[in-house]
Length: 193
Figure 1 (cartoon, rainbow, N blue to C red):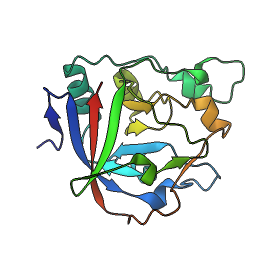
Figure 2: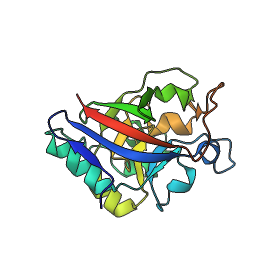
Figure 3: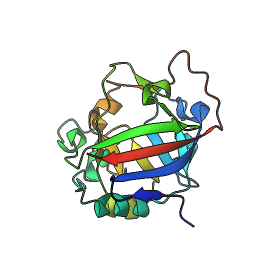
């Protein structure tokens, strides 16, 4: 049974997530903040994601494409492979996929994403439908929504490139005053614009 709810008329998908703030902050102990906003349960990236969900990568991509939204499918795996190569243009890739609105519901009440995660630059998020289905099948990382232009994410924040992440031009962390507990359940809503 799918956990994904699809409203074709309103171009909205919804799915449940579980909040894991402790595993998100510096999961590798290397001074790097994480970038996996939502990962699929049991996937390689789930142990370091802010939220984990039971929905599948393919069903999210198919639902968004079913609304007539175009995926970018324009961030090559070489963007990640060449992240430390200053001569390569690929780590500066930015998806041109359809724009999306993301919101988080807790017990029927909307909660701003900034309540869960903030960036030192205070940029407004710009989520897009990256698609990346071929890359996902090759990589099998399991990152459904990424906070950078990742070649493995179905949905990405197009404000941030892989090069910026590795140069630490941004870092995401839990904001001060966040009293939300790990293990709490929420609902992610994605709307096509």
